[in-house]
Amino acid sequence: MGKFVTRADIAATEAEMTWAERPVARTMHEFMARANAAHGPRPAISYQLLSGPDTKRETLSWAELHAQTTQAANLFRSLGVGKTDVVAYVLPNALETVITLIGGAVAGIVNPINPLLEPEQISAILRETKAKVVVTLKAFPKTDLPQKVAEAVRHAPTVKTVLEVDLVRYLSGAKKYIVPLIRPKNPVKHSATVKNFMAELARQPRDRLTFADEPTDRVAAYFHTGGTTGMPKVAQHKVSGMVYNGWLGQQLLFKPDDVVMCPLPLFHVFAAYPILMSMIASGAHAVFPTPAGYRGDGVFDNFWKLIARYKATYMITVPTALSALMQRPVDADISSLRNAFSGSSPLPVELYNRFKKETGVEIVEGYGLTECTCLVSINPPDGVKKIGSVGLAFPYTHVRILTQTPEGFRECAVDEVGEICVANPGVYEGSTYTEVDKNKDLFAEGRFLRTGDLGRIDSDGYLFITGRAKDLIIRGGHNIDPAIIEEALMGHEAVAVVGAIGQPDAHSGELPAAYVELVKGSSVTVADLMDYAAKHIHERAALPKHIEILSEVPKTAVGKVFKPDLRRMAITRVYDEALQKAGVPARVVLVVEDKKRGLVAQLRKSDAVEDAKVTEVLGGFTNPWEWAA
Image (cartoon, rainbow, N blue to C red; front, side, top):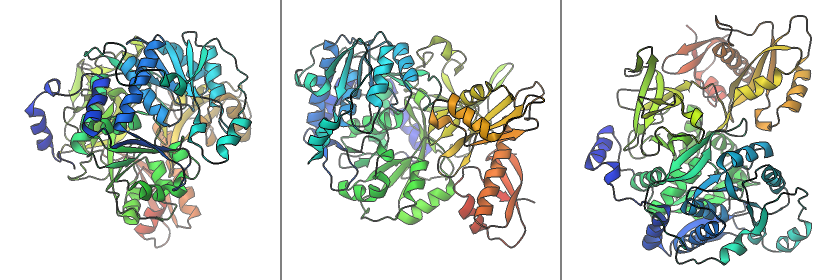
């Protein structure tokens, strides 16, 4: 397992040869062919529609996956997809999702789209990418996805073909016969031709491509940024960056006999690159349980039994999922499990400690971005881990902490906070986004991607994230633009000023909260504003969990909303409520800015209180606490 454990080890690896000199696959089809040649009969991908530890499952070997992704690439080319054309998929997790992702990248440019988005957002992405083919679900009980996609396609004139994936084939027993009888009809009409994905796939050759696989590096994927709100930007990923993510997984983490439990969605870079590409590079076996992953019915209740069923050696997770898992007993033999990998949002220290105590399993935290084709840094699995840090930069990844001055960019000193800037094989220099205007001022010194995250690097080279320059609200790994909330509430006639922030939450990391200043002489209740928000904010994830009316919203000297003060107010309120509910006689008296730790809540106690009791209550939040002087 983990070979590179210090900065010196990473530097030695980089010194062996440049990334361009390494004998890695030049095309996605070559990447898959190598996996087939080395691991053909071994299991590649497993999937089960339902979460039960004994329910029906399907597994594709590397040979089968190579054959079906070849068929998919041939199918997409037959539908007019050239190397610069787009195959979009709006799918939950399934074997077909994996096949589409890889096959789409072989034939042209694959564009995964979050199925939780609304039709307007899906349609906007389809228009921005000029998608020719869309792969989505055939009508199925308890999902409105086919209807949403049909509405989106109706407003995306470049889409000529819709390929439908029927999940009925994963059912067994009576359900397999009942579901087709109760399948809902799709009343939305559009002009694209609708075909059955698996039936069309079967018509294509599986032993060869029907077109030339040109060995030149090119854009092979579009991934939209952001979560479930706003109009996402579309990031471009080259084959070299996708293969780089897989090479890192194979070099540092995974071996052919590993089994990786990944209940994360395949429209997100975490599952698509650090996991799926690493499986291709290493020959390991990935398991995707249920269409909705962690959100699937019974997944949390059955999770440890699923680990036992597949004898998983690694689990892939996020802090919100870890928090939910810790509310359930470890009720199965998980002795096969060696590590858990966590990403997407900061991991509270207390949650890390509790998980390790309950399971005996180490959580390894890392850092990545859609704009970097994901991976940037990781706490070395076999090296020194620093809790609260996102670890050391990967080989061939160069992280700098920069601050902008009138003269240009200045390198920050050790432990000095600045903007995290990244250069690596996953960064598409100069053309990260499809919209040219979005790339303006995105790079420092022409090469280093400005992430918008604030952080510091310590004397050992470990990276710490301390805040976000972009002010995004990160709810369980989903990026929510506060402007969506602010613009909606500003539409109310009684509202003069709005500031939206993420308030601390022990489960989701952050939840949206809004602070409102009213028009002079106007009157409105919080309940009225909540109702107004519900009607004008169309994505549920962005609905404020808390709205507060202030006599005056704090502002800067030039009249901008001063959000650090709003965050201090939110931390004080949320922490005080949590302490009061737990019966702990302590309250927040001040929230201070620490250059290394970010916003820190200072507490004062009225009676004798043990630190452990406060940590038990507040340890699930990402903002640290300390006793006031």
